[in-house]
Image (cartoon, rainbow, N blue to C red):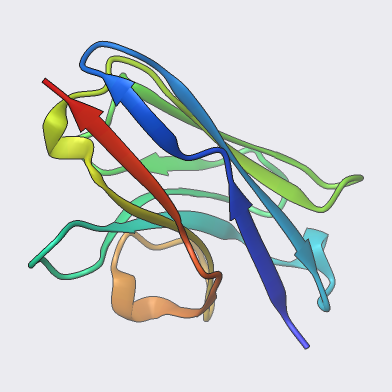
Length: 123
């Protein structure tokens, strides 16, 4: 059974930073690309970032490019999202997810995700 467990969310002031972590189990982690999605209140889930299985390819939504950094540790079967320069528009529940095939920033192309971790950015 695929399991994805996110952590690291919280309340932070605008301009602050958070580092999200996602621990995984139940699948061959280093055989899959993996990414982060988020869902703000009243909005659809959206792709934030994705990293290839080797870590050599990274992709970011325009809204977070230059502020967020995705990374992975295949030995620990974990993926991370370093978020800097946070603003209130980043407030959302953040999920790590496994795309059906290759990396994507389209939420509909993810087949599995965790329970999410809340990120709240105050102004």
